[in-house]
Image (cartoon, rainbow, N blue to C red):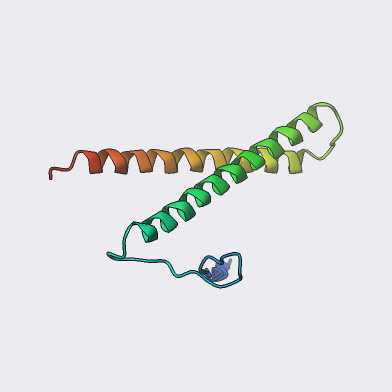
Length: 116
């Protein structure tokens, strides 16, 4: 009896990082180093917007899971498979969000305990 080889995983798609674009369509340079607080404000605003968008996506996934569950209980949906996928996706996204929050809080507390 031969054992079949496990097929290799497909390569991950490459990430593309883009610079922010202002209203006139020109790319903005992210200021680093000792260029002043203006660069830090841009990066801080972008990061806070990123976090807000991520939390909105998690909220939308949670609402989709709740809607799918409600549709199953009312008999509007007969396919349990798609409902379970939506509920598990919501559960995983919330779990990941909580774990990321915990890691950020741990890092914050670690920085606050540092001796200067």
